Length: 184
Image (tube, rainbow, N blue to C red; front, side, top):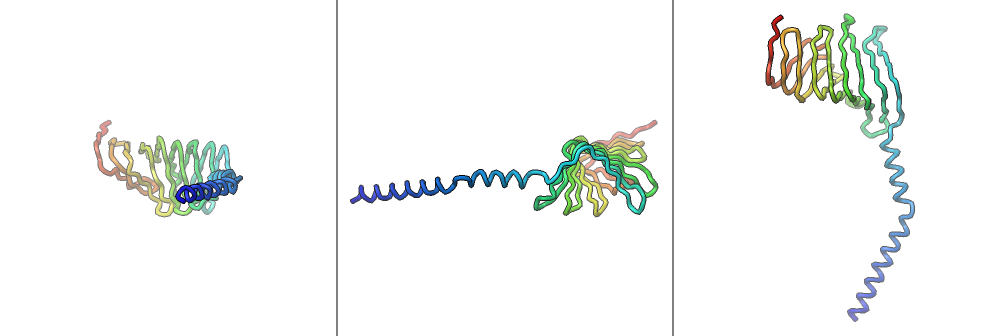
């Protein structure tokens, strides 16, 4: 009796496994294709040279070798995987520049994430060096918690973190770890 129940159980298990095996004929391939399509960029642009204006006044110039458009995602963004060179003009046409190895622009939050060898140079030649810098487009605010070097005409400051308005007129190095005064 025990042997018959054991054989019946094994037959049912084998039938169940066989049914599952044959019911999954193309499902794995379909899932893989869906996965690839949902993570691929919606579009790719190359050799970008874009000029932005506001009320007829030039406000910025964006240059990048490549832009990937991921606005087909639930949390849409644009990625510049080969870096950016961004020039920003203030109301008096003073020029600030930003370069980075990579940039991501998040559409829903208006946040720009600059990554890798980020260098921000102001019209007065103050320069910030860091590995990551965020720009909040809504608040027009620059910030990071990464280590920074900030060079002005008077000093070089090292620290962990940075906060500033978009024109870098009230820049502040956070958690200062060292400062060298420059006497010319």
